[in-house]
Length: 246
Length: 351
Ligand SMILES: Nc1ncnc2c1ncn2[C@@H]1O[C@H](COP(=O)(O)OP(=O)(O)O)[C@@H](O)[C@H]1O
Ligand SMILES: [Mg+2]
Image (cartoon, rainbow over all chains, first blue to last red; front, side):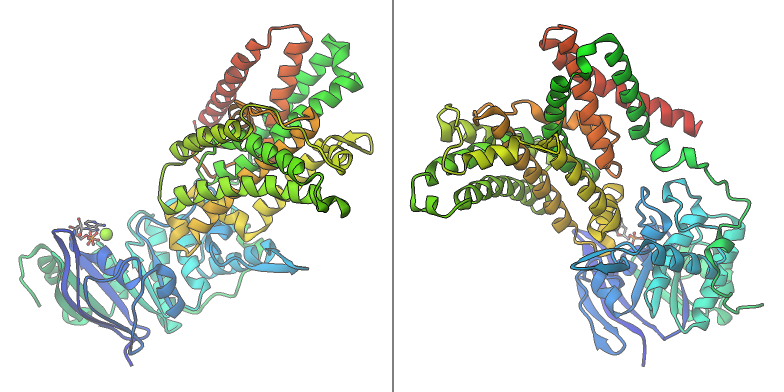
């Protein structure tokens, strides 16, 4: 059984052909790097998988069943979680509030249900503990560093029992030490049987954690091969177009 | 490499990191908020006024201040919810008037009919009609803003005019007095006293506690803040953004309708020009109390304190014998000063 299969997926924004004829398969527990220059179509691909908008054509299968996501909740309900590039966090709320946003833990008091603050803070602290992140559940996101924000966004995906986690440039705006932590987390996710699609511009990140690398150029998939059979030089050539395809 | 998942850490472990700067308690939460220093300013002003004018602390004057600020305060609670989502509601003053008028006119209409034989029923129907009017205004605001995507400012500015126009049209400019067998009860629940306090201020405080409970201890309240903080993020997490928006405009309108009906009891009549211009005082009260017009910040304590500050200063001008027109000027000055002080304060914290 494949976890996720895209068949001939394309997407147009008016006259812009953002994606064309993309076929790809993700196996359970697999860590796949998705690379490509700015505008190559990576984010568009992610947004289709995550249900932000439907593809203009093509088919999506999740666990061998065809799916039609119309909103992010649809994708999440089958087990697809996304850490967005422009981290989708509410600055004015605490870390715990962001982690549980839209799926708050509640306590029933008679006919009313109230937020269970202590349960949410406790669970969030656990998640940060697993991430080895120096982030506190009751700190407000506005006052956080880039790495801490990343931890909050990743903790969000860990909350649900996700089967596929897509990370859109999780290591773009954080310190070297936090990069190592995020990569370590990705390895932990793989050990837990969770598939990860890692979008990154950083060659060392992709080659250290990904089993496979997919390269996009101008909306086309130009390469899809095991990292052990490729090299940073080859991938760079594929990204820039110095090498047509592999 | 060791990939073993670490044991779930307790909160103490997590807060044990020493290299992350922790803000002191007085720099966080309520103590760092605009609401806190406006509260301090309020206390100082009240002390100064009671020293300068013995009349300020007289029971009659205090009851007057309490009632006046309660009407504004109740609506400020509702408008604060809208402001926290990043919206604005300019139609509340007009909604106060139309709800009050529909309530009074319904009382007139059912008086003398067979409904009189069942006690209290006529009044309940009238209150229901007044509040239903407010609900309708809020629903229209909410649908136009959340569904049709219109700007809150323009939508509610239009509604300000439409609803005020309706208030004049249905009354033909004549004030409507409550009547019927339940009229004494009506005055009792709108303008009476409970344990020596005007009921209006008791409604205000109860509603403030309810709003605080909803904002800080329910999922709905959390979503209200999330909308103001990052609407796109809120939508991505699956929050029913449209429904939350529609709900806050309805709650805002209902708070206006309720306060409008209370004012009928106080005035003994519902004139078409009831609460004209109140929207400015109400929004000013919310802003002075610390609600941020860009969304994401605000609360019931601020709404109550802001409304009280405006009324106390207004009352001070009255006691000092200063022309009423200057009060309008002063409200504007207070708004700008409050926002300016907040701006200076945040600059100081970030430098
Ligand atoms: N919402 C949109 N409307 C119009 N064009 C878009 C939209 N989103 C992306 N595009 C276009 O689609 C192409 C692919 O963009 P994107 O997927 O963001 O690339 P990447 O994430 O690889 O940098 C670009 O040409 C971009 O301008
Ligand atoms: Mg992108």
